[in-house]
Image (cartoon, rainbow, N blue to C red; front, side, top):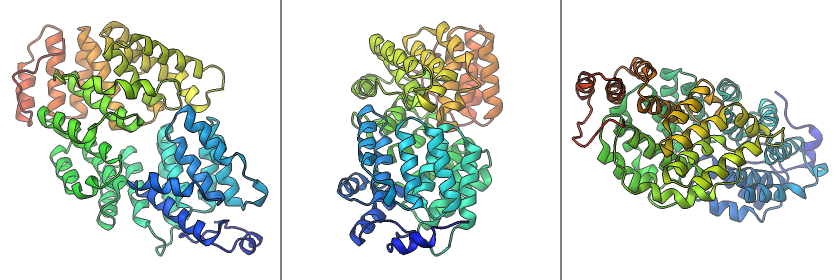
Length: 474
């Protein structure tokens, strides 16, 4: 493991909380430490810390601020991030700072893979650079590179000093990577250990929530998330995503009124333009409607936010959600603009990694979701089936991407195809204790002329709460 050179140590006398040298005066170093910690902890105070840090001249602070700004994924924030780092003189930077600068410049240009490669090399040489590790963790996740995500955090954990702060957060990240790799038992252990040491670590709370979702342990999931209610109530907007997981547990067992109440009160309480809030909302409303639940006028609350997100396509995963919302809302002109914008983004190599994903599967998924939202089931079926083994490329978690699996199943059921029976049977096989999977099976059987009462009875036996108003989506 290499470290900063002796010349760099002599030149830069200040160190951050993790013992790594950086340029900046003591006040700037202190502010940088707070910025890193607020980022790691998904703190509700992060926006205020970012505002204070915007006055800092510390190079690492500028780089991290630029990375955080880029996460909004809009044209304006991309310009703002590029401006933040454009005037930095690389000749005054140490090797760590130069690598952070390279990473953010590549990220701003759309070269997500190049940026993560720089961060990966940085973490290999300086595993205590926890900001780089966290940025790498999320970047690899968004690229669907789960094996690399698991490897990078595992290597960092092996070199981590027990005396450094926030060690438990590494266990939470490791938990998430293990879960996405299908190693659920180890994932749960590391995640629970992390939360026991740092109860307000929402990423670790979230990691265990994923394990319980993937294992079909919905009652345990409800108890797990409700046990973290205090931390969630005072947490950042990321709390809404954890509550989204709670809503999925409730939905899985047919507790629709509770899932809708959670949507209104905690998942999407006010209109938002934030990408994660919007994808949470779209995905939950979709899932509810897919099994025949009337969600009322809730789609209308997404109109402004989804419309705001058009025109910048660095997150095809999000675009696929927006496409369904626009189709469902009847905003056909805006849906056409979204799809045209994605196609243009993917032309040549100008779109970077996102353009590559759009070409490989993103545009087909977005078209399928938009068609499904409009009720064009045959078209939706064709587009989604075309790439149904490739949408891992979109990034997102296995739990999030299940939306597209359900969308294809719904389209097949609407089209009354035999494939709907096969997909529903595969879902039951993968989730044998899932009440909702049996409901899907009943819908598929009924769509092809059969009697779904047996499957519905099995769903009730597994814990489904019968709803007299629930009807097959056909």
